[in-house]
Length: 348
Image (cartoon, rainbow, N blue to C red; front, side, top):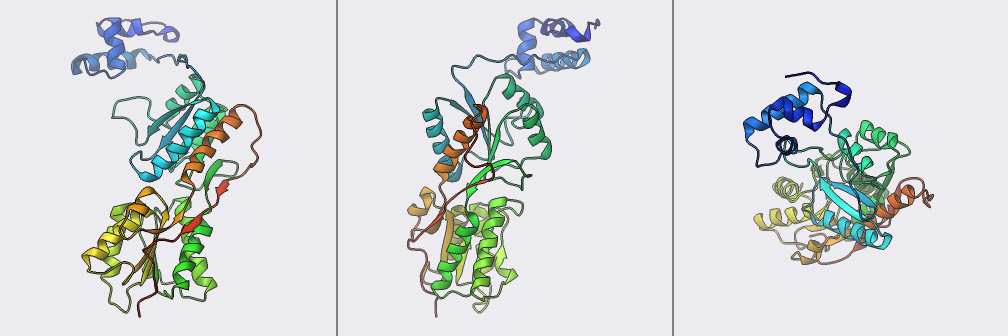
């Protein structure tokens, strides 16, 4: 393989080094399926040996764009966030590009939130980035700052440093209100099923639950605080554990950190032959569509997911256009408790 000036390595150089046409080299580097594996290997080897780096040429955009990255696009929670973000994007005259982590299939580049992805977003003149319930590292935040690329986190999955922009709900207030509702119904053994330990919203809801117990002089029972994810599977697993306890130790009510967790608890109660709310009361958090569809209809804390998505887009647009946002710190939108059919008086 001949040598070339490293400062001027082009796609043509890579094609010559691999002994293929320019079009084939381009297809191989873009992971196209119509290229033989052996050919792709030769092209990648030539690219690496020559130090080829594709130019980040800004693609012409019909109008300004905002990139949104979520950890999961298949949940009612995320869909509500997306609805709000899309509505706000239409009003603001911008487009919304959506991707998710862990991202595209192996071998596809760039992966969302990696350094090269930020470079590409910046090169394509995106207004900014919205990250939904996805962990953000210091290096990722620093990369966005270095590119002067506005970044807003919605319900951040980890604590963010001072100055980072975030949008969420009043999770602590919601936790207090949900737990107080159960206490007012006469429940004293109230369990809490939480999301990931590092999740900021999960931690705030836990603190609201603990605060309500303490304000009512009720003991905190560590064995009734369980869970590690905002999923149906977590609710089902923890529900089975809690409902298998002896009746004197079993909770009479459960505050679930997400509606999906609450529905897992529903199934655990059905398996145990227990009725909701006759034998055990359940409160969720989110107020997604499935809360109203459940049987019995789920009492839950409504968080304004649609408004959170819309606020994320507006904040990115304001920052990109040089407008000073009305709030400089974390934005917290109000929660409300929605009373339905899954809670009732504590069983005697």
